[in-house]
Length: 107
Image 1 (cartoon, helix red, strand yellow):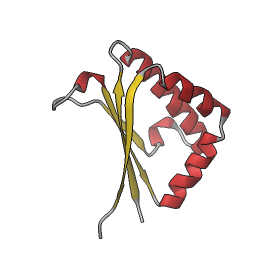
Image 2 (cartoon, rainbow, N blue to C red):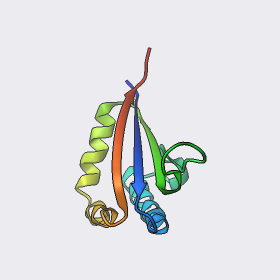
Image 3 (cartoon, helix red, strand yellow):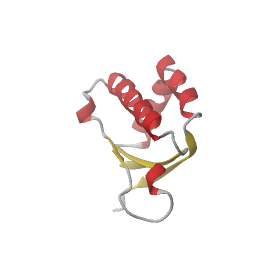
Image 4 (cartoon, one colour):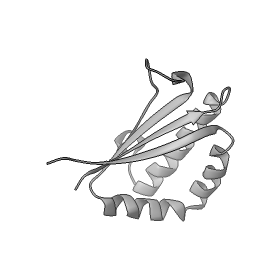
């Protein structure tokens, strides 16, 4: 069963440039962990163009996984990676909040 992971990150005012740099670093690590070039990664990132709330300080990402098992295996590997662990601490200085939603495909 396919699973779509959607994250909404609210970035602290004045920290968007730093957040974008951290996101690029994170994507490079993910690329290495998954063994595929950045442009082929199953993760897409967005910044809201219009809408309610504080759109200028928001990053949205989506990842489509083939199964919960695939997603769990990736995160197990990622959380054991020293580069990911070092990156996580840096995000605390730029994020106001970080929400993650999981969706499953409907038949």
